[in-house]
Length: 552
Image 1: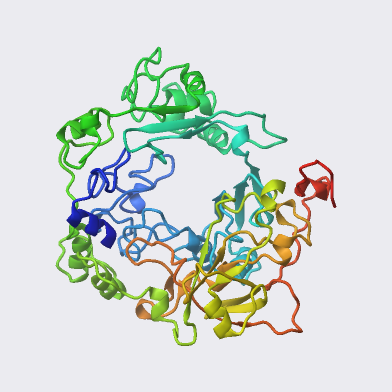
Image 2 (image 1 turned 120 degrees about the vertical axis):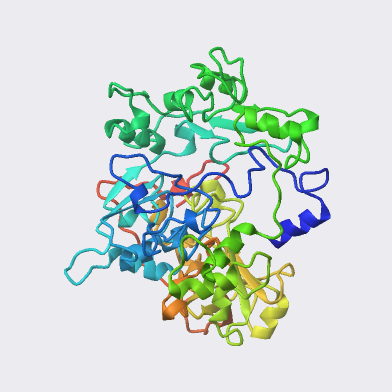
């Protein structure tokens, strides 16, 4: 926020050499879409009254009940995390296990390795997934996992929906979802399958179309109740945001013959035309529309015609945030609408400052920074996607295990050796790993790659593979909840405004491992058991050889 204000003051927003917008941005501030406003907006057999992801413009847009308590299991869009557009997935399992704000009967996880690298406090989360209540019933009774690979999360599932890889399905990178536009205009793209799905794998988007059709959800059936879409490609071609809008998931080659762009009737040959153009559509804006788009009348009128924005009015950047001030007024009892629960008033009054200010991360406020003086950071390696690709023989050459990187000065001060085994400890847990010196690391910071360490036997890796023996997760040191919340309650380790997880806030101390300790990572996990009926696969499949010579 401070960086965006600095750019605003300098006048570098959407101008040459400055921060450039990419369609469909800029959007109104705040954007128009709003989430549901209460339990009454979620009814069986009825469309959701609001957007699953919206942008509250004030207290009256929060998704809370009549007592001001959360409706969502992650407590998103509540008084605890009012502007949590990305949700708080890192708290879903903990909340479901505790029954806070309510008990659930089914939890569905899609492509998220919440039993390993996608979660904080990994050991405890794995315990929660198997934990039972006083009646001997699972606290999370039924777990559905959709994944393309045998991840650590799949082992906990009651039902597995085997998804496909990108090579086996149709996909869309849409302006309506995760836009990939360039500075000079809108861009979207598609993926075309190059091989058929294996076994019982099915693209998850096809599963959604099938479920919507069988459940006869209004968007998936015709007025007579018959099925509306044959499959996912047919859905992408024929779906419109509203009947006759001419706006669909793909912007290119619309109209009956593909002669229109951005807005037009469905085109039955749209997929074919994308494929002939390298699977990409790029619309280049007139030069006069490419800059100052917050205030460019020509661009704003063009964007309104093509439904990129609802209004053609200037989009003013707020240095003083009226949205945040509305929440602060509510905390002070000066707002005419919804009021926060008493226990949260001071928290909201403190953090919802309409002007930016610095404060210590919540975790640092409850940590003895003298005992834990170092910042620890985990980040994704460029050679991997999510936690995928440890089953890729070529990529395993780049990352089969990870180090904890630190500056040589820090290593010398701590008495550890380059490549040696060390203990890394936070207030919440500890790991044993190898360290590596690098002059590029800030002296008070250590870091490592995420998701290189694996549970032995997961991802079809051998139980003694490097990933399970030498690789490690920093996640064991990061907690999803913090003490010292309002009224003494534990609170999410998240930003109090956006709910953004505090992945980078953990503080640690480091000391050498003893010479008599095992030279392998800790904590250790039992190898994942083979899935019943799974054929034994040769280990050589996971070992790359340029000469195609098998090695054990």
